[in-house]
Amino acid sequence: MGVPKRKASKSRQGDRRAHHALTIPAMDRCAQCGATKRAHHACLACGTIGAAK
Ligand SMILES: [Zn+2]
Image (cartoon, rainbow, N blue to C red; front, side, top):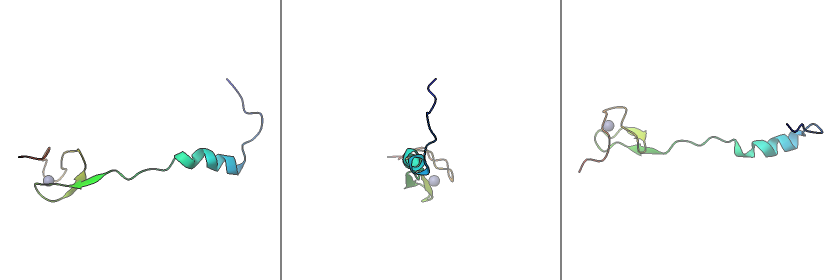
């Protein structure tokens, strides 16, 4: 494997970590009980799976 020739500076370390930020999951509101839930996921409060017609 390749081995770095010299130590990466703190600046370059930051450049590398520029893509490491976490994102907040997309949230939605349950159509059944109104609780906040993750989009495209079952409601944790009432168990409703999806949009019932
Ligand atoms: Zn619900």
